[in-house]
Length: 84
Image (cartoon, rainbow, N blue to C red):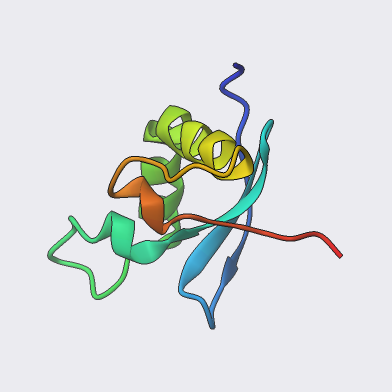
């Protein structure tokens, strides 16, 4: 497994960041990053840093979802993006 993970954009309606991992694309909800009490929601910088620090767990969660399994909490909140 490679650690490559790219943050593409923030989906305002979903309150999540779209990321691409070697295992596929997914939405990472901002609620996973709620450990920042001084912010109503994480800033882009905070979100990018949090996602970068948790890239392995996010990638493993995407791999599990692709395999039809449920990732370990709290990463079970991540959802796959179905490409059309």
